[in-house]
Length: 548
Image (cartoon, rainbow, N blue to C red; front, side, top):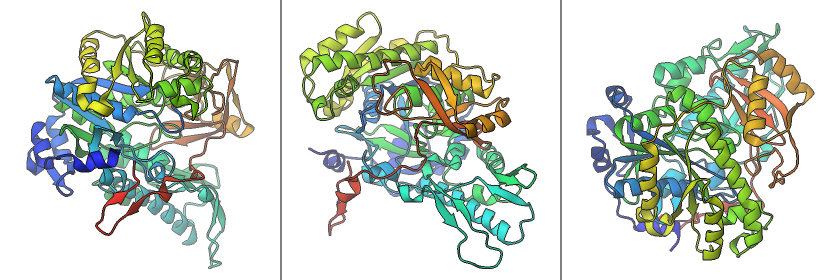
């Protein structure tokens, strides 16, 4: 049975019943139909002094181009905790329409480990990403209007881009203000995908509405003729942007197919943004549950690093355990097997690819945390291959075989029980870099300690940008391919010395971090040759087909 059919046949409960499990009264819920709702920030303020539960971060090895079930694993783990009578809450990112209509498909899990309503979540959901798109583009409109109206702020260079939540490579560079009207000054502009917008990062990193407004006001939109920064607050746009985001800042409550609570809120990509759901949703979950399961995008070199070095500084809490999800097909892919060969037995490729997993394990240990490997079982896996992996992990790290895609929460009970024990142990968490170090040294720390690079090389443009911001005491957010530890997506083994190549640095004053673009990474993805959009359809009865 396909994922969409499993989700459609599930017996969901009214969202009020899910809220009652968490102690949330109807007065604090804003319902969007029967099965999804927003939770009022009043409730967030009411419980903010509650004791925090245990935090479990789910990350993964470097993925194959089709993804490896990290979200499915996260859902299964949360369901399994509830199976063993632990009050667990799952917090996830919102899916972007770019991957839904692109190559990766939806992001609501799979098999019997899904969040629902699946189609709603994968499409417009409660409108959060649309609100971010509108806020971003209102700021663009106000910038160009200000210039047209006489340019009182003497804006000379505009660095702010427009955005759209779709993959559209044709919009990476555009020309605007071409109508020929008086005072129109044509200039080069461009679009980012919405999930890479600074406003998405701001929404996810804000602690409350006041913090959101402060961060919005601090956005640098460009520079004046004296090369001084011009901000969103200078344009008097921060208030309007905050109004557009007044509902988007509230976490969304949905449920798993086993009727357990899920907070889905915010959706930055991890390869081009910081890859974590919102601070507000995570803190709210910690104050309501005994165990909170959350994920960070793509492999641990991207999502986990950014979760630990960016989000944890604001969350003021480190994970009590880290799950590293691995699939045999991804390990074989990293061992040199083709995509087609990954579903066939290939012990030689598996043994080579296991080194990718071992490096991620060592990286998590560098933070002073205890990882556990979740072997996400696929129907194409053979017992002999599973034994090879288990033997390699013996004595290095604890592991558990995950079968929740097929069995739901029952297929992850062993992992949940092991996580309870890990969470009860003390850990000595430490960041991979000192926040007071230079930007250059922070980048070098990640490149050498996490990626295993020999050194970092900067373009001439990046060198100039680095000089201006090098002393800032803020985190760095490295934009890099998800497929490799290096910045070359084809170098899967990374068994030879390599450097990280920085093409550009972008100060995000509102998000309060520096984006570091490496290799050929793009902040506006393109569609594949055969996009998922070609297979998505709706029949006369309103039944959607093709979302997976």
